[in-house]
Image 1 (cartoon, rainbow, N blue to C red):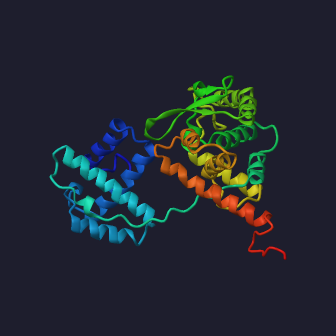
Image 2 (cartoon, rainbow, N blue to C red):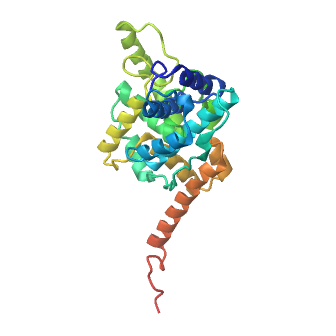
Length: 310
């Protein structure tokens, strides 16, 4: 649901999320979709008049189309909306608080091995500007653990190549400094040395008037979108014969897990990932322990349930 399609009250709530609470555009868009589902379910009844019975019926219908995690997000959206209504004196109760969240098993993140990472990062071949750009993006995402939105929104002024770090703004509009690895710096310098300007010159000749401030641009000279980068990663993963589940976020998972495997402490990884809660980062310790177990099973004389020789 867009802001134009939302009711005035929901629109006001979404503006509150976006501009007062600093919620990211992607998260506020998810809230808009979930509240849109509730508005459609309620029909002619104003959405602010939802009650417990209505919400229970709505959640029962959601089970036909959505996974447990998506249902939990939808309930959370209505809870936040209800709390806002109470705070502004538009209703007195919060029935959404009484709707239980579905149980969600937290799956371990899928991680690419170091050889798989190498194959993916080197998949953009040749000296074409777009290939040089894509190598830089893949190196940077794996080398610094950025989110896709952070990578695509990275500005030229955010880079400090000489100092070996960059500045990025993540969820909740929180800014953090992230170290840059040597491979990332080399790839970025190669991209900024000429190929980026080459794309801008071509686009300017075709009518581009406003120069982008972002580091990574499309062939048309505009900021590369999250969707565009996602499609590129899928294409390179197929070329490198990687699993079909490979996605940009798998590079972030791999960054965190490989750091822990290499001995990094959890607090440092938390800071680099931009996690507000250490518990979110701790899931990577389970992945790391899993890889340690796999290495033990494969390498130790008593691994794979082998008996000690007598």
